[in-house]
Amino acid sequence: MKSELDGTSLRKLISACECPLCFRTLKPPVRMCSVGHFFCAKCTRSHPLLCPVCHSSFVVENPVAFLQVLEVMSHLCGHAHYGCTQFLVAGCQADHELYCEWRPVWCMWCQWKGSINQFMDHVIKNHSGAHTVSTKGHIKIPNNQNAFLLKMDKVVYCLYINQKQYNPLRFCFMCYPLAKKDMNAVLSIKVVKGGLHLSQSIHPVSDFVERKDIFSDPEKFITVPKYLLKDTMSVAYLITMDGS
Image (cartoon, rainbow, N blue to C red):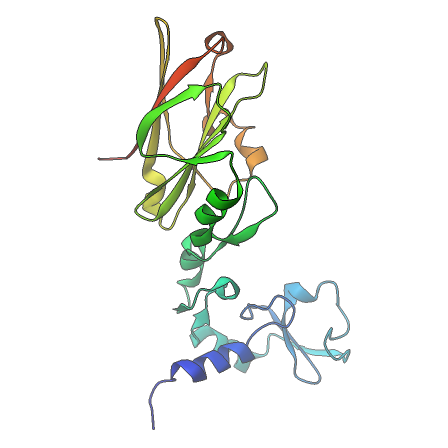
């Protein structure tokens, strides 16, 4: 007799402990109906009286034995529907899911939604306004492209330029981190216009931050003054990691 569950048995157990509403492993507090269907309590807020599966009454909240099973059971990553196959022990799930390469992201140019490891391919194939670059180079302004993508050690970074007419030029440096250390990247820019020079550096914002929140916080982007925006200028950029 095996002392541990094999992969197939573990998947069946995890599937049996899945909430029928959010399709994720049940999280306390848990509610149970008289037939035996379990739900995350927060998922039943729109169904406070009757089971949304069989319409029977809820009879138990936080069944002790079942909660004990959830405490010791490995959990399938919450991004399993996008392709992640990791089993996670209690206490490690949140950290893994925060940086999981299968977590969903939204494209900044369209309605596409997919995993991070598919994001760069999607952008390159579907959006001509995006351009891949190296970690060092020059960008001419104005430019018909507003996003410059690169990969460093499998991590996707995006230099996004907001270049609306009559507004200051704004540079946003975005990261799609696979680990906390990926946020240690630094974007340094140097604007050269005649005899004028402007140098600034900034750390990236993560994909967790919504675009509207990025450009409402001056600490999250670099602004180039209007007096440098006449005609054409050159922006030299360098992307490094802290300590390198």
